[in-house]
Image 1: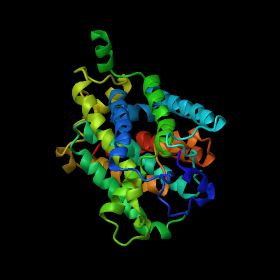
Image 2: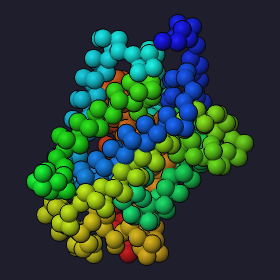
Image 3: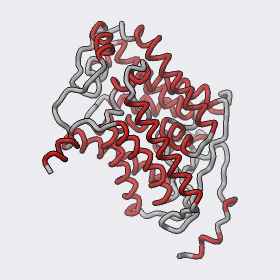
Image 4: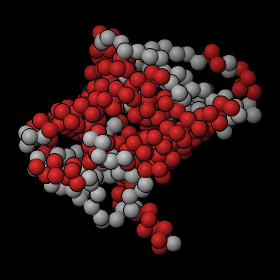
Length: 167
Length: 191
């Protein structure tokens, strides 16, 4: 194992409000090595379609409490996630490159309330959160590009006004 | 063997989907110390394509290329599932929802999305435009304002037992509840 593991104390990881970084690995990865994320993404895309998570109808049913399906999906995912992270923490499991696993907590801001409410409105309208937008396009919904372009405009607009918005 | 393929082609149960999605959290951490979160990609695309000298988009997005590979994979996976892992059965929809929507002129229940609302033709209708363009805008604006979406907050954040993510999750569920039950019935009248 490379000795660089021991020369990277945790406080070396820079965090600031504008940090977009959710990549906590110090290792540079080649394009080839990035393909493994595409494979996990593929699995996720298949699940999105096969479990009908990208369906506008399923989202309507969820918010009308007419179906258990989406609550079941999210509930199971969270349960499996909680158990997995507990195991990783308890046994101090390392990455396959031998790095310590780091999960940076998201600090609370009031923006999480305002932003989440707005996102919720958009989620019920489009039937898509950011992941499913890409799955909708992949499944052949050509007008998904319109939703994606609008979402990019929304994100860009947030970036433009970021410092003026209450957080 | 035939039966296995047939059952793969039928819609998957919630517990199968939930388990797979839940396992993506440790998988990303273990293969590369990556935190699950998809809405950041919208920011990375803006940073890569339209940074416009805005501080919020000035960072090294190339460090986050892995996430763009991840969404590229999502698109490919959705393509594979749609073309090679699907049967031709119509989607099963709650009867109450069906009759509510039928009354509003939405009768296409064949696919995952109703074509009366989500198609290029419907862009010229008020409801189609509002749903796709305004809805998409709110998704992009809201998730960035909230610093996360369903994957980053509801799944990753809750898995890590973070209360800010619980607040976010409750708020976007509330937003969706308000839209579906109180605002959408109004918007859907304008076709």
